[in-house]
Image (cartoon, rainbow, N blue to C red; front, side, top):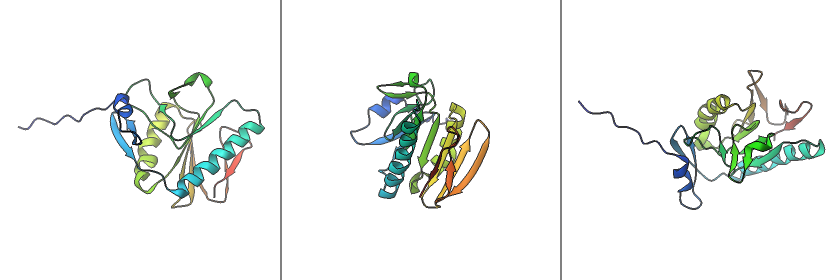
Length: 177
C-alpha cells in the first residue's frame, strides 16, 4: 500500500524568500503565483482607487486606501498572505510597516484571465471567513462588478457604466467603466 504523499505547507517566510520581483499569495499554506497585470487591469485599479481616495478625502473619512502590491495578513497565522488589488482599511491599529494584520473593511479584486477561480471562489470564501465587510469582484472581460456585502449577506451584480453603491459608505457610488 502506498503511503499518502503529504503536501508541503508553505509559510509567509517562503513568500518573503521569493526572488526579487516575483509575486505570490499564500492561502492555507498553498502558494499561488501572480502574473503581472495588464494595462486594462491597471487602468481600472487606478481609477477605482482614485475615486475612493477622493471620496474619503472630501468627506474627512478615517479609512485608508492601499492598492496592490500591499500585504494583508488575513488570519493570525503564518499560512495566509494576500495582496488584494485594492484594500480599504478603517482601523489604523491593524496597520504597521509590513501591511495590514486582519481583514480590511473593503476588498476589491480585478479579475485577470489566469485568476478567475481564485477571485470568484477561493478568495471569496477566505475574505468572508476572515471578516471582510464588503468584497467587489471587477471582471473586465464580462464588464461586470459583483458586490458581496457580507454583513447583510447580499450579492448584487452591476454592469460597467452603472452606479455601484458602496455598502460601507452610504451615499457613495462608483461608476466602473
